[in-house]
Length: 447
Image (cartoon, rainbow, N blue to C red; front, side, top):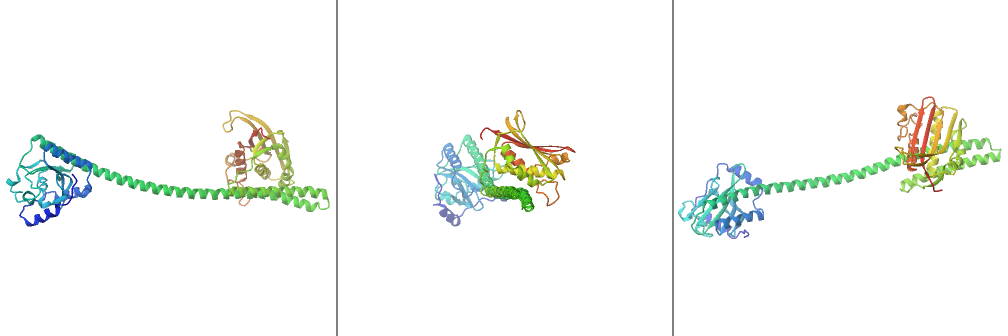
């Protein structure tokens, strides 16, 4: 039966107008009240677990009224009740305030009319006309009595030993329920706090990811821009060399036409580099198609020669006619030009650079899938690269050149191009014997 408050004001008024002796406070009153407050149970809504306890109490003791009563500072409050339409009474009227004075025993009042503590009580002389009371204290682990599981009747009677034992068992269950309730509430608070922390962490994580992506985007854009500037500078060298030769050959129309075409070819290559930069900014995919490797190298041989200067001789050894790879042709041109410029710089003066192609079958390679590959190699006869430097040459921004003379992106671009063509770049060098960079590019049947 749900607890209400219809009689509570009536009981409080009676407490002040009739003679009654309230129970004294227990010797551990401050600790007891602190324990009760810590449970955060007072004035909480009804809960099935406690309602079941009072139902069992009334059934086992055959009484019309049963309560789970908690003794507060100035009142006794009913967490659960059967047979009463009240939620609390003043502590001065509480039978349970007497019961908690002896926590180890069930307090039994067979006939309130014969007990000097209660015979003048408004609850005995008026509603609910209590004649019989039995209460088993609810005891905490620390030994403080918070209230009772009690049964009440309107006629004189007593309890058997088995009923007393059952009432005490229900009181122990009530204490356990109170502790469990507190643990559940603390767990819910912790879960809520953790959930909020998780939401905050996820929010911060998303913000961090967004910031990181933005930073990576800016970094990638900066790296690409620096790389294209590096490649563009190589093309400008070809344009400059062609224009200088044009000026010297101004009186030879055919030679001027040839040199002009080389300069225009470099300009077209530069325009393609700008196109790649814009494509990257717009997240466009590169223009990948089948490119005949030997034909592309021969087509650009004059341009490469002008870019390297008159002191560098380029020897072609192309052994892969009609063989093709899937790639962006202009990225291929930029990669080869990077290799040639790096080889020229390694010569430190006049020298030769050998550009070779060949078809090779790969089986059981740790870095390449089995299949046929076109190998494009650029070899110089310079002094070679020290071993401690060799392992780092493909890393972005790594350079051994003086400040302002290199970005460290040339070989990084070459390595990236090789990967995009389903292959890899490898380098070999020995002191005094020169350096060879080889691009292993997956051969395609589509031409």
